Image 1 (tube, rainbow, N blue to C red):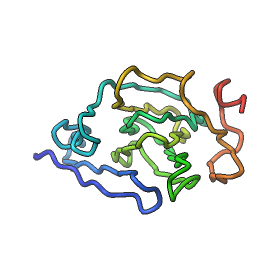
Image 2: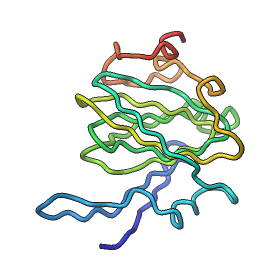
Image 3: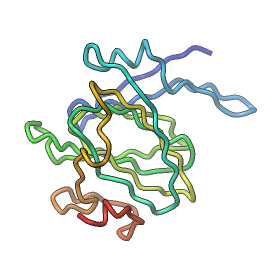
Length: 176
């Protein structure tokens, strides 16, 4: 089994990349590599590397986001369950400003998405439970919730077609 990835550029959002790993399937199940530093770090700007990973486990109908910042690169994936991943271009200088793209990630799709700084990240849990993984790259200190931007999940300018219009939200996301 070799480690390889197919990287595709989004046809909707500038600078967004979709990573599809090679998957080896046999009678016991499947195996794949989600990250290889030599290959995937080459997709980042010079002198930037991934610093830490985070996991989030959520219940059905939970919607997390739309959150982001102006300095962090993220690789996101769903390692268990099923989610609707949404990425929104919030870069005012971008020709794809306020455009969004969704992806089905999880048990049936092991793809990862590389999200550049300035884009909003959100996901909606479709299965009973889902475990979300993100790997972060940035210069300096980590930007946590108080320093991030937040956009309303139901912002009329975006008109995102969520699977449920009454999701379970955090206080942060309810307050928008």
